[in-house]
Length: 114
Image 1 (cartoon, one colour):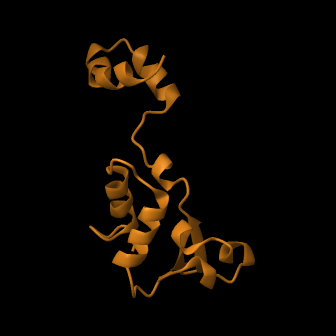
Image 2 (tube, rainbow, N blue to C red):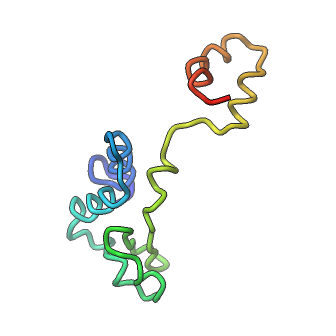
């Protein structure tokens, strides 16, 4: 459900992130549609926790893990999935004395704001 090719949450998240205007609601809907009938996937409103039941169906999904159901709110999934380098890592690379390492990240550091 999470790692499956083409229908897993990770692949669907990567696919959504590549769209011109990625939206968490569209990603969540795709997870529900492409995995319809999966025994471990459900809607947030079916959660045993009241706070989780308040999450709309297009704002998250419930996965039944071994220890119980967990509701995932997808509001920030796309933002967290971007491939940007962490600022501290970028700073380390810019200060690196190894020219080969520096050259690997040259394009990345040129695109980052100063």
